[in-house]
Structures are given as C-alpha cells and as structure tokens.
Image 1 (tube, rainbow, N blue to C red):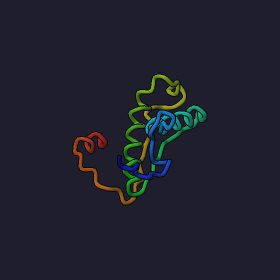
Image 2: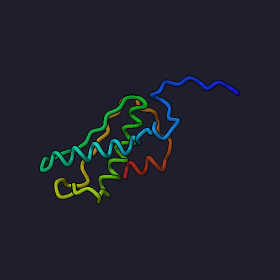
Image 3: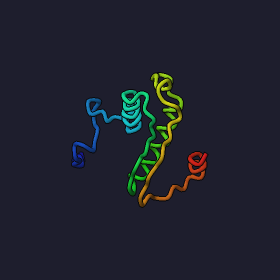
Image 4: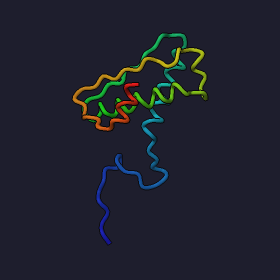
Length: 107
C-alpha cells in the first residue's frame, strides 16, 4: 500500500468535518451582509485581482452580478437599486479563451 502524500492541512479535505466553504457562497454572503448594514447608501462594487487572482475577480464579479440580480431570499432590493454597478480591476490577468463566456461578460 502506498504512503499518503503529505499535504498542508489548509489545502486538503478528507472528511465532512473538514468542509471547505464555497468561495462563491462566501463572497455572496459577505457582500449581501454589507448591503444589509449599509441600507440607504449609494454603493458600487469593485473586485480587484492580480494574475490568477484577476481571473478569480472576473469569476467573482460575474457570480455577484448573477446572484444579486436574482436575490429574492434577502430583502435588499428595497434598500439598493439593483443591479449594483460592479467593476473588475485586474492586473496581469491570464487570457480567457472561452468565447461564450467572453460574450456573456460583455453583455
């Protein structure tokens, strides 16, 4: 039997107790919380990333746009105009070669 490959505890999940929360869920929950505590203020969202973080910024902004535009569980629409302006500031980002995704982002 082969020995297990050593891995830093923060980078592996082997049991249900090691549940790693979804990045999407975490971001949407945090932004929704910020929207709730800033009722009545005019807001915009800027997502910033460098290199692979720039690609994550694009994905996070896309997810926020989709989730906030269709959010019916949380009563944020009474307090903020939706959709909120969302901008991505990226540095040294990798190319996105998926034409369908690029068209989706541009529309």
